[in-house]
Every structure is written in C-alpha cells, then in structure tokens.
Image 1: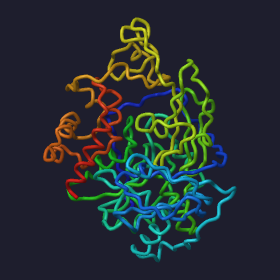
Image 2 (image 1 turned 180 degrees about the vertical axis):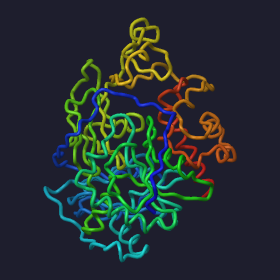
Image 3 (image 1 turned 120 degrees about the vertical axis):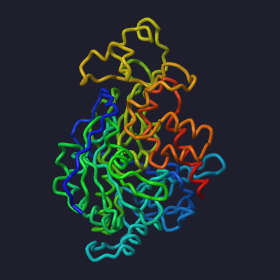
Image 4 (image 1 turned 135 degrees about the vertical axis):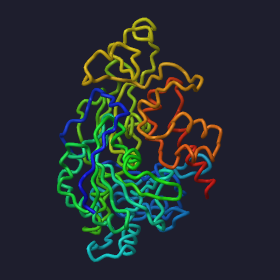
Length: 458
C-alpha cells in the first residue's frame, strides 16, 4: 500500500497565532487524585454501567458499555476505587470518577502477534481491552460501530489548530507502538487501506510503512481529518470510514504488544495565561489541575478561562474538572468579561493588537508571525444570519457552508444530504464560527444536524 506520497496544498483557512505557544519541552504530570471517564465526550453513546460506587477496579477494567453496541467497553484508565457516578438531568450519566491508587495494577489481556492475527481476533482483542473507543466514524463523527466494515481508516498525523501539541514531541519514543498500531489498522481497514496525513516537511513519520501517506501544507484546518479525507478520498452516501488520532494509534500498538490497557496522553498546555507553556505527559481523564497550574487572575485582572481542547473547538472547564477524552491540549486565556470602550479598544479603535480575519483593523499591516493575546469576548450579540462570504475564505471544502447551515436550521434532510453533510463534522466549521459576522453557534448547529440525520436514518 506504500505509494509515492501525494502533496496537497490547502489554500483556504487561517492560522490564528496566539500568545503562549507550547514549547517542545516535556514534563510528567503529577498523579491526579481522581480520573474520570465521561460518556458525553463520546457522541452517540448510551452507557450501561458495570460498576457501582465503592467497587475497586484495575487499569483496563470495564466501567460501562454501549447499550446499542454491547461489545464496545469503556475502561478505567487507572486502578483504584469508583468514587462517584455523576449524573445530570434525567439521570444521564455524566462521569464515572475513579479515586486512583498510588500505582497502577492492570488487567492482563495478553499480547497479540499482529502478523498472524485474523481480523476477528484483532477486533475482539481491541474491544475486550477497551481500546475500540478511540475509533470514530464519518459520517456523523460518532463512536464507530465494530460490526461495520470501514471503506478505509484515516489518521491526521498533525494538529494545525492554535496552541496544539507538536506531533514530534507527542510521539517521541512511541514510534514502535505507532508502527505496530498502523499494522493492526491495516488488517482492520481491509482493501481501502490506512491513510496518514502528514504536514509537508515533517519527517516524524519517515520510517512508517504500511499506509498511504499524503503531505498537506497550508493553514488550519489542514490538520483536520475531515479536510484530509475530503481532498484525498471523499465520502459518498452509504460509505463509512473510521478515524483515529495519532496518539491513539501509538497507544493501540503498545496495548497489542503488552496486553495492558494504555491510556497515555501527551497534552500541550499554553495560552497567554499559562506560566510555562509546554507538553505534559499524563493519562486520559486526569484532573486539569494535575496537568497545569491555573493563576488566580489573568494578567489583565480578568478571570481565566480554562479550555480543555483547542481554543476553537474545546470545552470550558474548571481546574477540578477532568480533561476530555479526545482532547490533547489545555489552553488558558483571559475571559473577556469587561466591555470595551468603543473609541480605544472597541470597534472604532485602530485595533493594532487585535486579530481580524477581514481587514477590519489595522493589525493586518503587522507581520504574519505576530502573536495575539485573545479573550473570549464575542464583541457583540447574535444578529441576522446573512451571506457575507466570510465562511468561504476559511472553509476548504467543496461545499456551500451557509446553504448547508440553513438547510440544517429548517431541518430539510434532502438538502442536507445534497449539500454534503456526510463529509463534515462540527470541528470543520470552527473557523467559520470564529469569523462569523452574525455570531451564530455554527458548530452546535452542525452537531444537531448530524444527530437529526442519524436518528432519521436509524
């Protein structure tokens, strides 16, 4: 399957340069008191519990499974005691919180020699060991279904979003596991093969074999797996492709060779309020406070917003919360609660220190490498949803984004299908939301549209 690597240049998009880019240093996080597996992180999951409060568990013990796909097990990242089962509205399970032991004991699943394994053996081992939860599928961007035969499996080998982790740092010392993971994915992917998108000029993956490598250059969202699929092998109606993140490929490979559940996570910490931006080695579901120290107040006297994930797509969290299952970054930025005086820092000001996608402010005269300290202020309220042409500048799909959003808002399923909803996920619209003149919650609308369609198609 190893072909000559194709080169693709993404022209639409924008790199938002924020202050506090993570350095290439890597430190080990202190062991968190508690770790949590959070069902809402997994879109499409209806959990059924296998443990109760007070039960002792090992790393790899199944905490719950998916009611609709009973073979998909969600494992405990550490050994310890089930401290609490947090429920939300209508008794929905929000988190299973484990109080960690001082050192981990593991469930022994036994190693698997990939070269002799059949597809069924491999799939059963991954399901039993709780590692299948790393896989997501397109369309819908939900937990993959192990009974589907995917057309192909896609991995984005880099993250192009602001303040994201550096793949060379995150995979340092893990390339054997990564190659082992690729070999396993090759068996699961069947004829469609494994596709790895790499950043042009990055030689981290130069030794990797057994997959089709495509080089991408250009601004964010070049690192989004949806953008990479769209430009190499678009999804048609009725097809299913699986996606998995590059760190999870390394974890999967390590699990198969050791027989132990492997929840390693290298997290990038950064942002203008982070005192030591860098990379931190931790475990899935750790408390935010064990990964990064959060200052009492931002440097401008404001509150500090903690984001689990990218500033464009992540979730607002508290220091006592736990990092999201698919997040490999934590950003600290000012909240931006203060109103801005219209003439100096408001919309009539020159805005030399304010980043703008359009040439609203004079900051476009400054060098491209200039970094900005941004807050979460919306700069206005929601207003009429009009066609401005702003979305198209940052949306590298052959899709009309505004038309697609409007078809979702009026629930026109036929139009959604024709306008390409099967190819997108909410993260692909993050820059549209960032540059939206109408302040519309674009990612939320896309997620609701995908959920509606999935329910309709049953």
